[in-house]
Image (cartoon, rainbow, N blue to C red; front, side, top):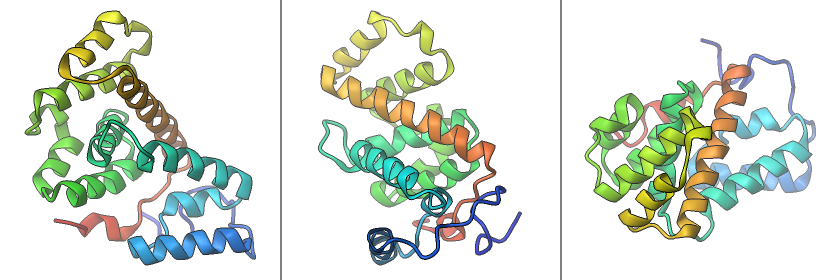
Length: 191
């Protein structure tokens, strides 16, 4: 395993230097709020346009108003990342689930086998859909959407579940393809 201080990925794509003021300020906010700059942001910082696009989409999906709670969105991230065996996202978003839920066991169960996690029927329906969308997206049909409605999700919520699932399927593939390393701090966080 390589040293995270050197490069967040196996690719030789150094961050823009110097960082634009807006990017530097964004990284400062990350450090203030999280205690670190996530390696995924450092990895994208070779191209500020790509970093900004990634950050805008992430922030919209994971932090903006939604019928899904932040914890539910992180649960989707971990479920999808576990199915895809994405090292970076299992570690980083597993830590987020531990933090938001206050339950280290929930974070671990979702990483290892989400079906073993203590979930509500509504959360199970959400993760069943995310799993099917990840493993066999062409097999999604109206009955799958109706199962979510029956569990209490609105059509807007279904859009958000699909969008978060799709986003993490994309980011998992980029993280795996580039051998993106999670920040070391995530491993012991919120246990």
